[in-house]
Each structure stands twice: as C-alpha cells, then as structure tokens.
Length: 170
Image (cartoon, rainbow, N blue to C red; front, side, top):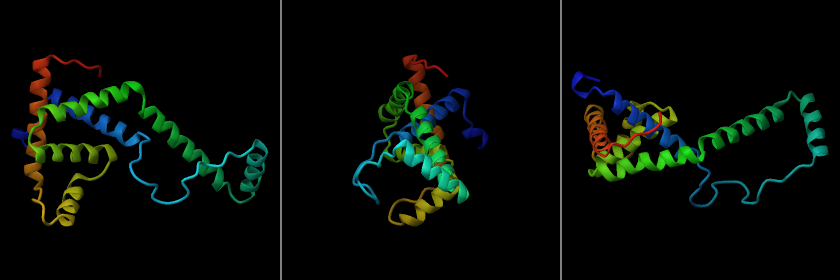
C-alpha cells in the first residue's frame, strides 16, 4: 500500500478481528437450502466390530479409508474450535461494526468480500478479476480504488470504536 493508504495498528487489529469473524461464520454448521448432493439421511453408525473389520481390510489396501476418517475428524474438531461461544460473540460484534458504521453499500460489499478472501486464503487480485469478468453488468472494481475503500471503511470503524471506547481482548 502507498503511504496515503497505510493502516494504523488499530485498523490492522480491526481487520484481523473481521477476518476472525468471517472464519467463524464460514465454520458455522448452518446450511441454507437443500443439500447439494448425496443422501439427506444421517450417517450410518457403525459398530466397533464393523470398524475393526473395516480397519483391518483397509490396512491391506494401503490405509486410505483410515486416513480419510482421521482427516474428517480433524476437520470436525477444527470447526468446533472455531465455533466457540466467545468467537461467535466476537463475530457478532465485528459484523455489527460494518452494519452500524459503513453506510455505503458498495464499500460494505468490498470490505466483506476482502475479509472473506483473506479468511479463505484466496488471492485478492484474482478474486477482483474473476468478479469483474463474471459480472460485466456491475460496476467493475479497480484494485487501487477498492483498496482505498477498504482503508476508508477501517478508518470509519476505528473512529467510531474510539468514540464509544469499545475495548476488546486481543
């Protein structure tokens, strides 16, 4: 960023807080709409004997089933860790800043898009070019302009947070 669009330490903390909020929102187990594919029935619960037999068979075939099961369990554990009561409370507070303080709808969309891109680990430049290509009827986002909008939105949030003397745990 250039000198005119440099962020202060508090703005960086606000941005980190918004990214954490988006990560929490993404991790929430809430789905809207029908399941995209597969059965809507709950998973079958295997007996310990079935699991033992499946594991022995899997060992002879290279162990892919067990690796997949362990990976799925790590994902569930990680999701639960991101959905704690404290993180959900912080998420609500952070998203409330955007709702209460950013009145320009497009600036709000840009800030939320930027936070989501960072939370998911995507490339911002690629996201902008894909968005502009997919939506030719919408106003194109220019990277430099939207970066200014993001910094300006963070400045507005910082100003209001300082005025209300809102403190948060790091």
